[in-house]
Amino acid sequence: MLSDLKTSFKHTIFYAIGNLAPKLSGFILLPIYTKLISVADYGILGLFELVEVLSANILVCGMPQVLLRWYGLTSEIEKKKKYIFTILLFLICVCGASFLLVSLGKNFLSRLLLNNTEYGDYFLILFTTIILSVLSRVPLTILRSEEMSYQYAICVFLQFTTNLIANIYFVAILKLGVKGILISQALSSTFIFLILSPYLLSRINIKVDLPELKEMVAFGYPFIFSGTALTILSLGDRYLLAQLATFDEVGLYTLGYKFSNLIKVLLVDAFILGLPAIGWKIVKENKHPQHFFSKTLTYYVFALLWCGLIASAYGKGIIHRFAVNQAYWDAYQVMPYLVLSIVFLGMQFVFFFQLQIPRKTKTIPLITGGSALLNILLNIILIPKLGIMGAAYATVLSQLTSLIFAYRTVQKFYPINYEFNRIFMLFISSIILFLLTTLFNNYSLGERIFYKGMIILSFPVVLYFLNFYTEFEIAKIRGSIKNWSRNFLS
Image (cartoon, rainbow, N blue to C red):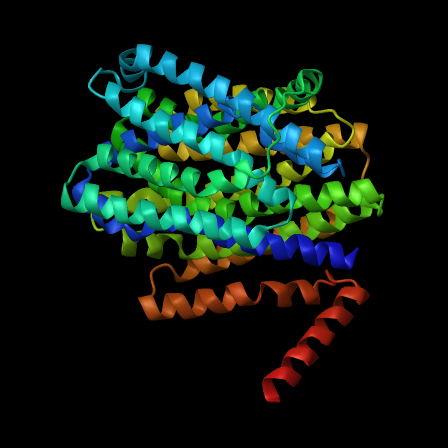
């Protein structure tokens, strides 16, 4: 089992590097954005991001999860190729129909979301990006299934480079603002799709399996609803902020979310990209999957909370350094709460994957849908009173509710003995250490970096004195330290 865990985390590292690259362009360009784009326009950009994520989740129809399952549990090459073409053709039809609808209703969408019609053409640019991204998920999912995380990371890095260069040209030089950002995304999505096309064509057999497609759609369609609900949980508060507050507050919340979302990009998204290939392999070979998932969750939460501690402790200083315009600086206030919500979200994704094993995917949208409705209700109550902090509180409470119901559902259909005593210890330790870091918020820059860094580095040490580690884990840690020391001194 240890080798499977190492393999899973090795792929997670490559996926993290690949996922981080596209987000880096946003941080590299943040000084330009905050100088050339107003807080209100940054809020509008946040709403476009909401539409992008929501639409992509709907249009992809759960087909990446379908492809991972069908591809991973089949040994016959010709069947795999047939499955890929069937899924690809289905997505082309869905995306083509959606683009036609958006072309006809672009002004309606602009008026609905942004209260005017001047952004109609922006939606056409945005949906070009969305459709190409959806179609690109097919070859990217094949790379995941074949455990080619290195090649995956290279492809995503190339997309990041294209997006970065395009942004410099359209935003910094031509000063096209939000439109320039959207054009850059469309160009980078086109580039990566063209790069992946030869690989995709080599993996298809031009034959449609309609009976199997019915099974695929039945397995995948619940992910449309769960993906929509998760998007509402994560990003829907931006729309409610726009309606109940101001675009300035949407902009602040979007910036706070962008920095908090680094944890999601580095760990949650990367881990969920790597887990299915290893998970389905372990299930297929019946290599004690329950024990594997239990240990995986514990180590996963350890990594999430340690990285979350770093982001929360340094959030204020990072935003103040990156944002040129001081009007953006209050965005740091929401970061600790959004980081905590992302930890809850990451744990949910592990449970949701486990529900795929007994084919109980229909329960996932029920869980996320109920939590999304709770999120909307809490936002309506809290935003008028507390602004962006109300949206942050609503997100934490909603994600916690979703996590609890996800766990209860997994225990009903695929019982696993999780190490909740250890996980609880991780949460308590990280929260206390974070509160300690806030004592140094008013110190000089050098002192803040040093003292907060010492507190953050003490996290695994504190756990040692709390008897968190098992004897086996302590032995492995000591062995790793000895090997590292031997290699360093030799």
